[in-house]
Image (tube, rainbow, N blue to C red; front, side, top):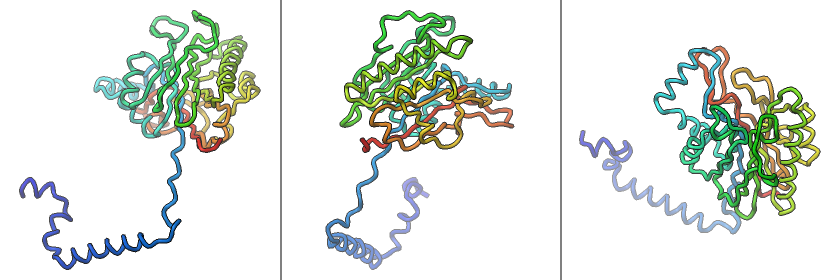
Length: 323
């Protein structure tokens, strides 16, 4: 068998024996179909395709450090690192969901965030964390990756210059971008609130108030607002009420589908990662779900199981044609 014959598909290799009559019949059929379509009445054309939903993901990526409950899983993670497969795995798992926007928490190091953005062919804005300590040279940082052009990027909008210290507001991060999404502008905030250490509820309430003020400033400019992040509080905590009282829609509470828990991937016990929507975009919410699948999750009973982070991502989809 020659090389050219090997490359030619089977149907093409047999074309010589088909014969002229069948070729003419095929041509006549094609011409006849075209003539029928030409004679179709007006309005018989296919309807316009339904526009793709606007998809956003929030993900505490755990500083690109996968987790495993057992030693065999940790050994598997080490082999993946050694083979240089780790960053491509994050990119592949995220790209499966065709996101327009990805908000990352614990997004360190910055070089990894930028490499992930290149893998996904997305724009990126990086927000250093307020608290820097051993192992966190960028602080506990955040980032927004977007398929759409980033018009503005602000670190801690509406807040004065800030040197974060443990226990103070936004010792993790708070970043805002404004996206050019066709005929509209959408403000997206990535937020990582202070963890629920003892007696820290007032700090998280102050953080929520600051995010709400920034969101209201965007609403006055006519923008819809999405706030995505690791809020470090559960839906029944007092802090949660601050989002609802400020007019935000909790997307999972509104149109959640499937399992709601987001942390910890090794043993899911709580929902602390959220997508909140404010303004017209909230009316176009189609669904919200936790990505309890693929390499995002651990599998009970498998000693080699591992997950890309100790959090699961949350995906929300919006119909932007609804205003």
